Image (cartoon, rainbow, N blue to C red; front, side, top):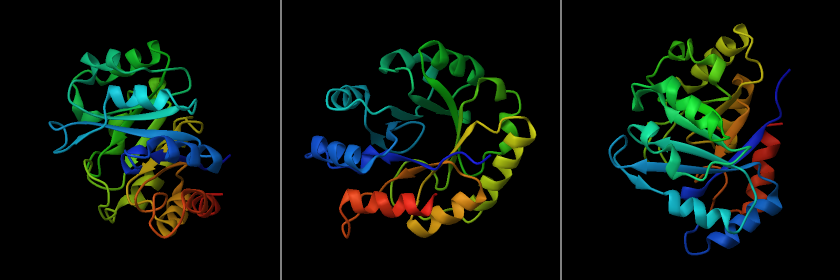
Length: 223
C-alpha cells in the first residue's frame, strides 16, 4: 500500500531573518517535517545550518525534524544534535566507515535512522542495512547546494529503490526525495514511488506564491 505523501520543508531555504514567521506559516500549511541540512564544508563544499540552528527551531515549534547530515564521521557528532522521538536523521553512505554503527546510535538516541544516497551511489549499498533503516533519501541533485537541476536518472533510481525495498519486505520504509522538487517533478517522483518530498526553493519557498499556497499545490501533486 502506498504511504501518504508528506512534505519536509527545507529550512536552508527559509528566511533566516524571519525564521519564526516562516515556521508558523509552515505549521499553518500542515507540513509534516522540517528538513534540516547540516553541512560541514568537508563532505560537501558548503557550510549550512548547525546544532545551534536546531535549538532555535525547537524554541518556536513542536514539528518533528528531518535532519540530513552531510558531514564526515557523523558517529562522532550524533550527540551534538537534539534528536527527539519522531525525528528522522539520515547520514550519507560514503560519510563513514561505520554506517551500521551510526544508524544504531541514531536509534539509541530516539531517532528514526536513514541513509541518503547521492546520485551515483548504488541502491544495493543498502542491502545489509535494511533492519536498521526507517528512511532512504534519494538525492535528486549532487548534495551541497539548493537550486540545482535534477539529475536525469533520478526517476529511475526512485523506482528501483522502491522496488528494492518492497522486494525485501520493507514496504513501510519511507522513501524520500531531495532536490529540485518542482510541482512537475513531484508528480513524477510520486508516481515513481517516493513518499516524502523535501520542499525547497523549487516547490515551497517561492517568490510567486506564499508558503501556504505553494504547500497546497505541492500536496496536490503528491496525493
